[in-house]
Structures are given as C-alpha cells and as structure tokens.
Image 1 (cartoon, each protein chain N blue to C red):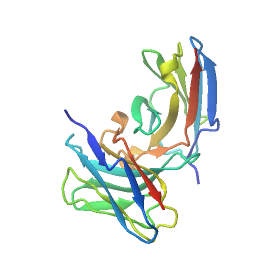
Image 2: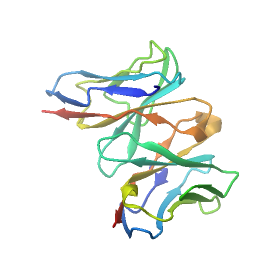
Image 3: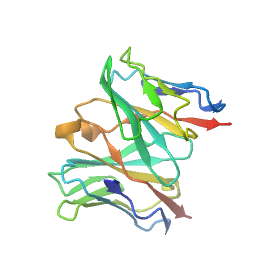
Image 4: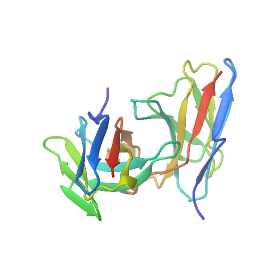
Length: 114
Length: 114
C-alpha cells in the first residue's frame, strides 16, 4: 500500500527552464510534507517543507505547492541548473499519531541538461 | 561539527551470516531511523526509535533487529532471516516533535550478499 506516490520515475529539462516534480498521497491524515534531494551513494538532504495549513512555500529557486483537496503536491525549480540533477523524494508525516515519522515516495530522477 | 555517521560505507556478507551496520549521531536528536533503498521503491522504513531503550518496527522489519542503548547510537543488525538483504541502508535522526524540520541522513551503507 503505497501512501505516497511519485508517478514519474524520471524528468529531463533544459538549463534555465522550470522543473516540476509531482507527488500524490492517499492518507488524509498527513499534515506535513517535505522534499528531499539525493545524489548517488549519499544520504538525502532536506530541501523544503510545507504544512497542511498552507498551500505554498517558497525558498529561493524552490517552491512547493500543496493541493489538499486533490491530495497532490508539486515542487517547482526555477530556473533549473545542472547541479539540480539528482533524485528527488517526496515525503509526508501525520504528526498527531507518529511525530516525525516520514513516509517516502519512490523518487523522481531529475536531469538538467546544459 | 554535528552530523550523523554510518559505517562502513561498503559491506560484503556471506549468505547465512549476521552483520551489524553502525549509526552514530552527535546532533542530540531524540529520534533515529533506519531506511532501506531499493531501485524503484524509494525509502522504506525498517525500524525507528523515539527514545533510548525503546524502538518500533517500521514497514519492513522482518529479518532485522536494532538496539538503542545510547541516545547517540542506533545499530542495525541484518540477520540471516532477511531473504533479500542486498540494498543501500540509510540511517537518519531528527527531533521527534518537529516534523517540518525533516531528517538528517547519514551517507549510507551499501550491503552486498555474496
């Protein structure tokens, strides 16, 4: 039972354009959502998060949008840079019952071409 | 310089042998986690611990065991009962009650059964 799904295993964009990574979830109890970035043979690093009381959170080139009614969130990277090439994981937490325990999606491999 | 350390980076095990993966953190985090990464399956939770001397099974605990005798340390033992142990193992830590801050991950241990 995959509660957090990233349906696109890979995405390729040109440098300077927008990258949009999508994530869907099924558990309506999820209150917090996070994005992580992972390079090969390294641990993931925290990128940006959003609480369910918001629909948008921005940090520099990275913006996360949350649509609770559709149980969908997306990560926008503008402008995309070659150094952004990595696997991006979406994660979610239902704080009331599990504190900071996170459920991760399968990941999307982003490739930014120069 | 605070962080989370996993060792070794690469580990080879013969079938039928138990092996222990080390995870140490000096971030004063209460919670620690073990995840397993397989291609196309994202990060799956094996065990987690909110406090010393207490831990809970995650989604794929069969064939694994853990201990939490010290706040800083959360070793994972992969037993011979684990049917498909070859994978990339990630340890993480976090403040338990601050889900929006996410996890700090170690750099991982790649375990190969030979």
